[in-house]
Length: 483
Image 1 (tube, rainbow, N blue to C red):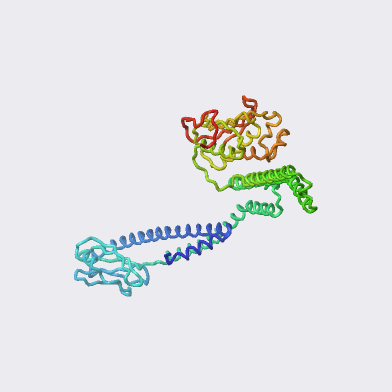
Image 2 (image 1 turned 90 degrees about the horizontal axis):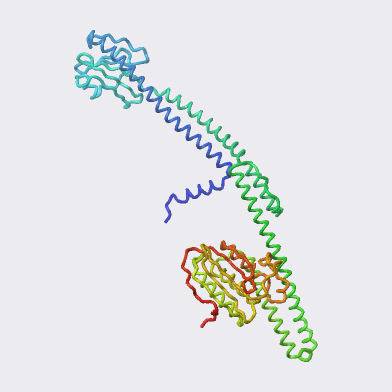
């Protein structure tokens, strides 16, 4: 159950968040000045009140001592009390019996208090007390004199404090208005680069021109913000360029298999319409044609899957976890054997722990083994080796094929790139590109070299998460066929 006062703060928060930054800065500046003026007024008022109180008390003490000296000389009952002039101090003589004498025409003072009576009886020498029981309020000083006491009082006067407070109020209002104007001006001046930045960003969004860098101006946070936005625009340019290249390359690669598939299907349809399908093609020709169609459909399916994988990039939902790379290699090798029953793989893997995404790593290893399987002779196994080397997990896939020509090495990991000798083989030219993307996403490196057997040696290095003593899973010469 929400508290009764819950909705109101939420509405206030929503209202505040809907205000512009200029309005917020103006309100904050005006509020800060108002609070400062209020605090200064409170402190100044207290100091002024304390100073006036102290001055009044000192004056009352001095006047009381003069009156007490005179009363002791002339006697409390006979001392002359001049008529009240109409303003100023008030005096009173308190006789031993408790009766009082006051000047003619003087306003009445409050009755003698119990504490003042103790001074009259000699229990104490003097007393300063404040009487606020009436509207005026009096500050009364009682001093022992002879057998009684004299009292000198003043009516409490808040005129000075009130005048001071009124003046401070006017000054505070002027300061608040001035603070709001200053805050507005500062906000407008300080946010001018933000306005220009917003206008430039709106222009980029409207024209879709990612090549238009926002001019660098200002300093500190503004400059860092502009640089961050320019970096974001550069990343978007690179992403759009990569998408354009991917679309162009995909269209180019899809053209050949689609054309072949369309021609074969058109041939079958034309022969079927003529009613000569059974006579125009021999059984062997029909089988070969259907096999070609199946191969082309399989290539298109593989190409579509690889394009989807590349287009998705690193945005997959698979989470990173601590895993034994040896398990990934064994699983990928078994999957490759299921695709290519004649493929022979010699595994030599050790336990190496890495932090990564299992499915992505398995796809990369599978592509390496598939690529090696296309080139390796049937009587020579593909060698897959995994070991820990320093702080890295090193995976090597070694085939005994013809190797990679030196002119092709720099472009081996490019999308859709296929060497002249590989264009007659099935494949899309995306497998090694996916390998490189996965490896880079895991902070690793993919390289290619010539193996000792004359074929290609593809190697990936991944950061290991924890040092481990290598334990061989399968020795060289064994294959990964499940038993």
